[in-house]
Amino acid sequence: MTPIAIGLIAGLISGSFGVGGGIIIVPGLVLLLKFSQRLSHGTSLFAILPIAASGVIGFALHGSINLSYALLLGIGSMAGAILGTKLLAVFDNTWLSRVFSALLLVTAVRLFIDVPTTSTTTELTPTTASILVAVGVLVGTLAGLLGVGGGIVLVPVLVIFFGAAAPVAKGTALLVTVIAGATGSWRNYRTGNVDIPVAIKVGLAGVPTAFVGAQLAILMSARVSMILFAILLVLIAIQLLRNSMTEQ
Image 1: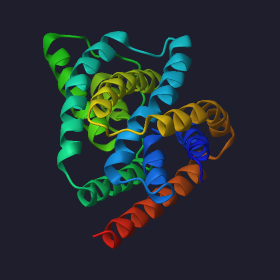
Image 2: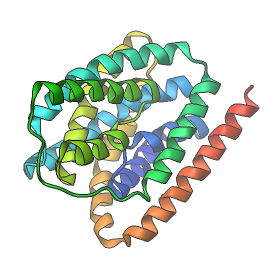
Image 3: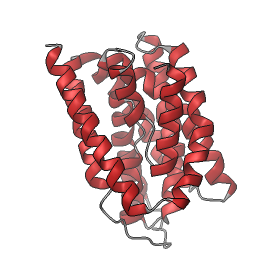
């Protein structure tokens, strides 16, 4: 399967289910293109940039981004992305595969948890600003280490603890993903841990299908789509674990 095909599938699933394309790109690179786990994480982080940027534009057109939150989270995410890419260079491929598989399983569980909606934004104080920066560090670390966007963590945090409406939380999370992804990708480029030609093909291929997926999401049964996607994530996690064991 070519990088373009992986990007098309990642974009479609990302748009359909509202998750970062990295959780599909990384397994695709490892299982289909035979990338090492480490190289797949670095390449995925670069590849999700155009997909996330496309989403940011869409949310921005509807005013669904909290720029103040994004700035504070972005500052933290840059520091976290640097830390995450440093950790990526330290841990071996087997450990990385197991951690990524755990992320897939957590994401599968997360799909069945309803996040309450609200539109009362928490007042920005020095305390909340500090917390946002700290959350940004966590999100950036996940991005730099695992090659994924931090939406799986950031969206529920913004909705539950900061009173952001769900669309604003998603739009803000995507903007933070771009900031963290750009920082982490710069670091990965300097350490040679990114296949830029493959990343560009995957990322650009995912942009149009992410839009198509978003339209399909409106037509699909939410319950059925979540069940099917959760099953897919569990199967991918199992295959990644099996693949890491055979390489030991």
